[in-house]
Length: 135
Image 1 (cartoon, rainbow, N blue to C red):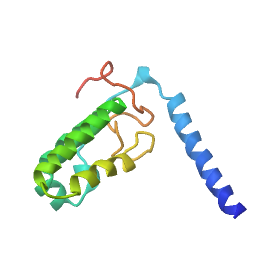
Image 2: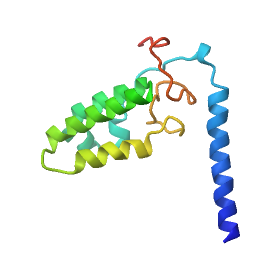
Image 3: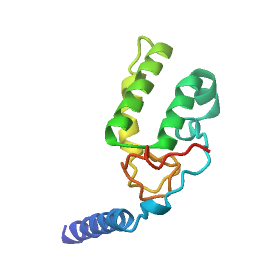
Image 4: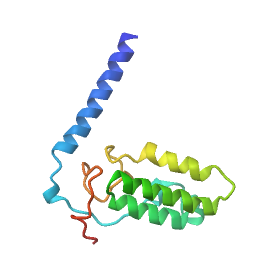
């Protein structure tokens, strides 16, 4: 039991240290918005992402690339849920996708689809409006 708690504690401390390091040493003066890339809703199978969710995914990818505040992320996720509601009017899919986005897209996890992936890792929930120059 002690060993399991110890491992969990080490993982939590390591994760917190990673996030703190990224936050403290992120140089906003040298922030560069990289060229836009489309991941088709975090690399979903192409048939689903392009054929059924195409317009929804394109807009979501653009918003996630740009990043911004937590409120901007919530608005982007809500717009995605509304768009999926048009594709699946009598389904739970929009709700599952909406909450799933929060589970896998934190700006503090170094994934290629995180919120604000157009910026270097560590940008977090900063509002890039003052830094924003679309390429």
